[in-house]
Length: 283
Image 1 (cartoon, rainbow, N blue to C red):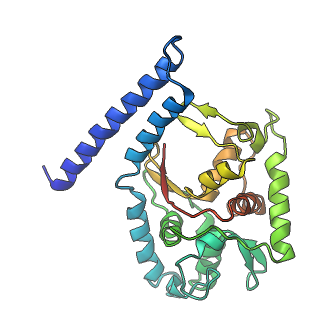
Image 2: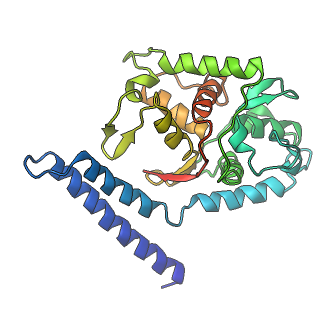
Image 3: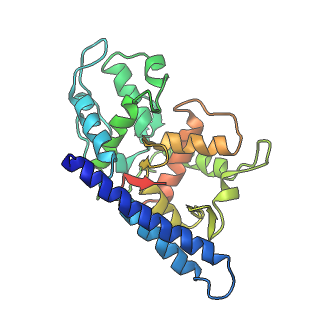
């Protein structure tokens, strides 16, 4: 057996043991007398998450993203190393932590994916249709966008979340996101607040953070983008918001839409001051 295979096997055994402990804690939680407290159950879940965080596969996506960033591609055969993510051409460290923000050359507020897409179109010559065709990866399709995002966000680890709200356009994006967060619509009359405005809510092992509380929104936002273990893929914030719309049975937003950008802006501003510690690993 190769060393990497042995390592994978040991890690799988650890995760199985941790998962069994969590399952037992949750099962006993509904069994009457002697049940563990909510804090004890949450502690088991956190222990499981800590084990998941070891050897985060997001690092592999970031490595591929760095290669894509530095490789001349597209009709113009240019590298993204000249892309200005807000701190100057080619500066990646800390850039994600300051988005979404207004970009004068594009004339709009952009999150990191929108900015990367803009650079791919303007610097490398890709068409918008090419960039937006399949932005989210699957078993038979590895997304260049997800890899690039993994590289860029990893370079902001340890930086404080600090999206600008100096300009009226940035404040307008935040205000739109705040109103969309509370908007009830769709066949179930759901809003983002339906799942994310109360303490202690959970779907199976998945905690639903109360995003109306500053502490919770900071903890949630600073872990995304993230590697989803259940899907075996690295996922971006655009994917995360799109999936929330799917679960609410809303029409699927267009990739890089103003709606999703505004919601990301709202969450980022609410998380201001927290230290970015992603990409995390999620169930």
